[in-house]
Length: 323
Ligand code: PMP
Image (cartoon, rainbow, N blue to C red; front, side, top):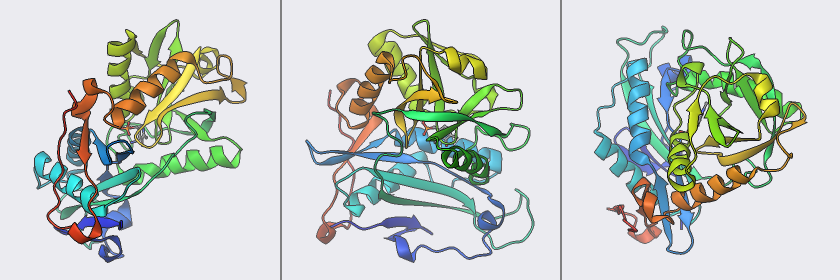
């Protein structure tokens, strides 16, 4: 048995009971920040492995500093609530966890100061977001990535995702899988919900954080895996649109997208037009890491045993070391 569950106003409850008013500030103005965390089902040992929970909450706290939203709970408590929620939900499949820190007051007037805030988190089943194995076809969007001077992309601000949604819809309605957004200087920024990496001359190249990108947790994990397992260096520097056309390989990274090969940009094949060799290697290494299958990265993945509905009280998660 499994059930959609939420932590809302200090309690764990069925998702359908967690409701906000239509006058909630976050609903009126997008004044909220969020995270996306994956729980990855491991068939072999019957656990859901929640990936880098702490790092996600550290980033949520950073987003909150920008939006002037205080997270009252400690990182440890936030992780505990999250793992508890996953255990009690009882899913035997991949899940997606969505924590939100939001301006919860019922109040008219766009501002950051003197508006009460709150925190919630919910969990739901979630399979593949993009076709990671076949690779995806992308277009450079006509929508520009919002600049740090407008809405900072380093903060995962709910309202900022209008920018992503415009780009994603344009790409899909034009027959592509995903958008690549350029910033207003024409530099490659990121996908609608993914960071982007190209391979040139045996090195990984990814845009610097100052090119209006989210500081991706998947990306930093992949950079570390690339260095430690494959001896690959990553260079952070601006990338022009035309460099996408001459890259040897290209891939996107993200909690939802994992490591996904980009096989075509603007109807031009990337490299041979099939997922590149380094991309495939990184994809496999990352896949094992997020399911708790690589002892080197066991500390990134917290094993949570899904509970049967009958014993879904007082659930606790275990941090399991495979080493
Ligand atoms: N960029 C954007 C705009 C995103 O929404 C995401 C998904 N959170 C990412 C990059 C990738 O970040 P992460 O690997 O931390 O999920």
